[in-house]
Image 1 (cartoon, chains in turn orange, yellow):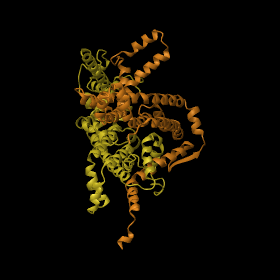
Image 2: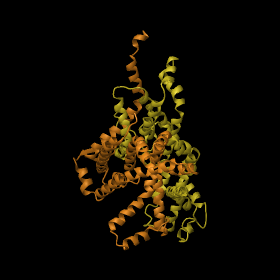
Image 3: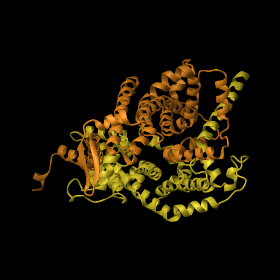
Image 4: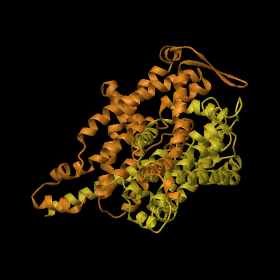
Length: 296
Length: 303
């Protein structure tokens, strides 16, 4: 009696897999897919709150047009954000790789250095940003020059040297980005460090015996062996910087939703943004995927 | 030989310089915060005072403590964060195990959706999500206009339970990798001895997955603690540290408009409040930093 009700092993396994992953399937449907579809609908509608909920009126592409043509800030903020974020990605990657190499060496105080380098992971970028905002306001109020180097003085002297203004601005923009870049590299350093530690020492010893220089063994051993994690880091960095809390576009999207032109325009803006992220991910995935060396 | 040693020594010097410099940039906001939090209001207008206050005071902390309703808000925040961390841990462990052990038609596709859930910025679905919870009708099962879940813990609890909370996708990815790396012989032995699938998972696999569970829980705890986005979206009006902090924050958002002494003073209070808010996490990190730093090596992401 019992035996006949038994399912085949394969079906049984499929059902078990389905059962264990069911929470995610439900959650993904309810809290991501459905809102995702709704956001498409919202972006082509006018949303009005009524006592029994909300009503939608189809308005076609008006919200998109509003975002692009009417909204005073959107186009500028969009361009700025995309350029800043895209420019940040390679720098974060290079920096985190460099820092991981630094932390992988043996020196007294290494543990403390690691603890400090990973502090941003724990403290969270949102909190740090809020702290800094308080700091900026503080500076604006007390009028005291903060920081070790008085940047304004350097800037003025560079301008007086008749260097092109665009160049000076670029340099200073880059300097301004340094703290952000360092603080958004925590996880990436962690990943690279783990990757570096997983490379067997014997490989380097063998290369050394054969007369390879440190430069050669870096490019022939270290680089290929960490390249799979390079891809992981590239994707992580892209996602992380496009959802970073100092992202002005996301701020604008939130602002538009709650205190601006409304939900419709806000969702239209976020759709513009999302399409750019997908395009950038696709391009980098395509190129980075080719350069990856898999051991097995 | 001497040249070699000189080179070596120089490199050591440069290395320490770099590490100290980078460390300073990272610690800068925190140090600044501490400096302001203990600063007496009089020192704000003293141009000779930059880093080290002339008059050290604890009055900022006292005011912040009261404005935040600290002891109560701390307990509330701690409770919510522990609850969400535990739920997220439970759900991601189960889901990750499911992906690691069994395949079904379309399971690869579903796992692709997990990755997708990491990539979608939460701001994309912010508006619909908010409205769905504001007029929650259980997908048409409850009568119009539904129940208002905004301000309750349900939205975040539901999302944590279904592995769609903050960075759950990342945790599912990690737990799946971990369980995949575990040998199946233990499970087979348990099956032979007559244990069911659930029992095997709970009794055999989970105890062996403690290292990964610790990591998931710690990160989930810290990220939920630091979260301002979802708390601000779903838990308005609750007595939580994040909400209270945003409230203090918004009181002086326009410092140039109001240069009054009180406006300036609230800044110091805000700094002290910030410090009170991140203190528990800093404590946690100070004692458990090993788990955070070794985390990636244990996730099976590498080699």
